[in-house]
Image 1: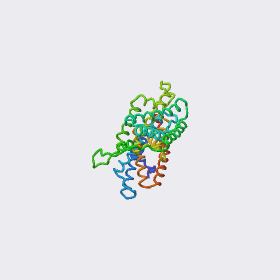
Image 2 (image 1 turned 180 degrees about the vertical axis):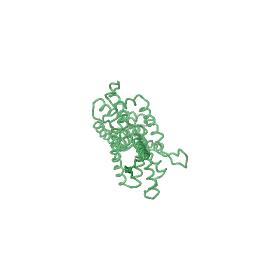
Image 3 (image 1 turned 90 degrees about the vertical axis):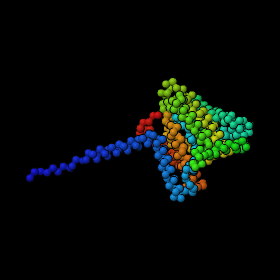
Image 4 (image 1 turned 30 degrees about the vertical axis):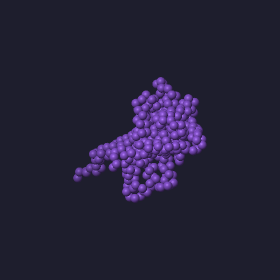
Length: 365
């Protein structure tokens, strides 16, 4: 009797190829999500909205989470997104550059703007330009300490954080400025029915302040020579120096722009509060922590040279609607504390994710 072949049957090559193809496809999707932070943020935003809409429909939240609520919360996006763009410009220059003083600059410039427009009777547009100029000068102090004198950005901006905050408090003996002219600025924070009465109204500040700021910053970092210098200095300052880029001037300019944007945010807060307040940018946890969190969450690498305006805007929306959802789930002081916890978790998680992505995929800009 002939011997029978007892060897194991060969594996189905078709199944093996399909399995490897699926693994390759999944790896490609993961790589795309990790290297395209805007796409990951969009996915996270969609997941957040689905969860909140579901919880709201189930009656778990203390109020409705719908289109009108989302549109109303856009008033919080305006200052946070603008300050996050200011942080992005500074962080792009690398070497640990960061601006902890943005909240204090908002407080101090708010008071200066209150004096110019509400007390001294200067025209509105002149006062707004003056606020931007004063903010730029405060940012220039930071830039001089960091770029010219070589102070570590963390130490320099922490020092000016305290200095600007103290000046904001003493400049009017801790009292806000709430003249009739200042109170009329609340119209800039009102919601307007852009698409008609049947659609949610959008806060006017989105069109008056946020969109113009986004356009200007996008142009500066993507089309203007300054943007190329910012990315070059943040990616490799030695190579940038050999290429003829003035490192000192570039870093100094970044801090000036951060201050100028902070000055404009001061005008936004005066309109939102209908009052120039000495704690406008430092109340609660302040504006610096959320702005830095949004920038890092958007994929702006703390090592410099990496970051996009679109990511910052999407991250600002995510943080704003996440905060709104937390308050609906946990009203009162508990909600505020959970907001701080969420900011901390987002900041640490985003920093770890940025570091992992940069190491794994060797992203340099």
